[in-house]
Length: 243
Length: 243
Image (cartoon, rainbow over the protein chains, first blue to last red):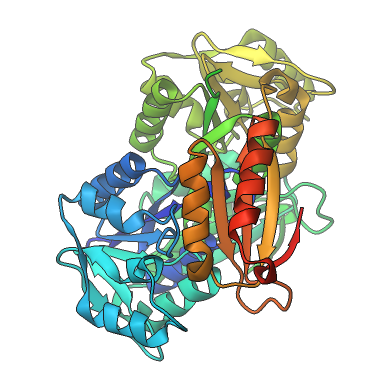
C-alpha cells in the first residue's frame, strides 16, 4: 500500500519574527504519525500573497493532503483565503452558510471585517465534525485551519478520523554508547532491513543514556526481526533499556 | 537600506514524525529578529537527498543567509553535507583540519563513521567563534549547523555578531475588544502608514485582554507616529495597556 503523504503550511509573520512560537505543526506531526499519515514538509511563510500562492500550488500537487494554519481572521494580514485562491486560479466568493453564521454570531452591527470571515475560494467545501460551531474550509486536498491553537486543534480533532490509514509500529533502544560507536551496528541493521525507519538521537548531559535509537515500520513482524538483528549487533554493555 | 533576508532548513525525519519537537527554528527566529535580520522561511524536510538538494539550491538563491539544522552526525541518516553538495553541484571532500580534530577527539580506534564528520562540500569554510571546539561549516551563504539544540545554539551564538544589521523597534497595544471590532481601526492605521509591520494576535480565555496588537518598524520616529495614529482611532475603553 502506498503511504499517504501530507504537508503543513504555517502562515504568519508573527512566527517568523519570533513573537509567537508555533505549536500547531508539532501537534499535527504527532497526530498524523498516530494515524499512519507520512508528514513530508512543514513550511512557515510570511503573510504575503505570492508566498502563499506558490506554496499551496506546489504542495497541492506534491502531497496527498495539505493543511494550512493561520491567516483566516478578520484583519488586514489575514490573506490565506486569497493566497490559496490565487495559487489554484480561483475567485474568492462569499459562502452563504458561513455568511449566515457570521451574521448570527456578530454582536451589534455587522461590518466588512466580520463578513471577510465568510469569504472562501470558489469551489470550497465546508467540513463539519463533532461539536464544531464553525466548520473547517476545504478546497480539493487542502484543509484551511485557523492559527489560534485551541481552534486549530478542535477543528482537526473533529474530523481526524477521516485520515486514519495504517499506523507505524515502533521499538526503542536506549544506549550508553556515543553515536559514532554504534553507527556501524546501525548501518548493518539498515543494510539487512532496508525498509526499516531507523533514527538515532543523541542526548547531551543525560545521566541515563547517550543515544535513543528508534526502529519503525508499518509491518510488525518485519520490525521485530530488525529489532532482534540490531540487538544482536550491539554489545550488551551498551544497552540501557528497550521499549 | 535593503533588508537582510534569511531562511532556515531543518532536516530530520524525527521532527516530521513527531518524535522530537524542534526548538532550533524558534530560537533562531528570536535571535535573528534581535539582530534585525528578516526571516522569510522555515522549512522542515525529511532526511532525503533530493529534498535537501532542492531546498538548499532554491533558498541559496532566494535569500541572503541560509541556515541548516541537523543531519551532520556520524550515522546513516546524516546526509545533510551530501545533500548540500548535490544541491550546489559540489563534490564531498575531507577537510584536513576537521579530520585532525576528529582523530584527536576519538576515544579508541578511529572508524569510518567518525571520519564522516570531517566530510564537507568542496569549497566550504570553517567558521570559528568564541569558545568553539568544533567550528561551524559554511558554504557560500549557507551555515551548516548541528541539530542537537545545545550545539546549535553554541555555534550560532559564537558568531552571531556577524549578522547584526538594523534591529526592529516595537510597540504593543493590549485591547479588550475582539479582533473583528478593531479591524477597521487597524486597517486605517495601515493605510496611513503602509510601511508599518502590524500584527494582531487574539488570545482566548485570558482574563486581561483579548487581542495583542504589535506595531513594528526599523524607523523609531515612524513607529511613534503610527502608534499615536492607532491610539487616536481606538475607543479609550478598548485599551487595557500599552508597551
